[in-house]
Length: 125
Image (cartoon, rainbow, N blue to C red):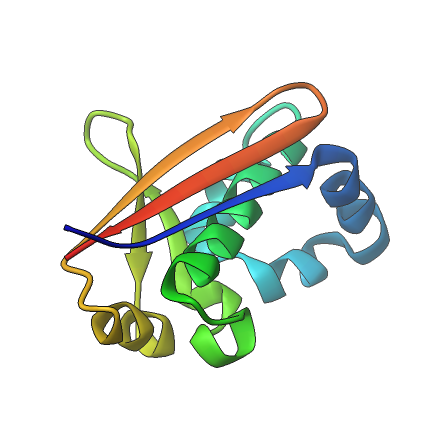
């Protein structure tokens, strides 16, 4: 049974601008070390960063809370399965928010074009 859904779109230029203005220090407020390790190893990290930011926003929408009440940005981490599929690892208040919605599994889909990155999250009960 689906107990929550969320989606978000992020302009890649917005993330590129954030990276230029705030640098790695700013990114550390939004992303985990593992996420940064993956994204910053890419030739152009902005699309991957934007997709991960969209995934975090989509998660908070799926649980029905904003990022402040539903947890911190770094409590929602985009990971990759052994097969390379994107997945979410949630902890802290974010995990509690998912448990409150009775979510037993989290599903994540990511996509991007040259201009926009998007994410869709499904909470399965």
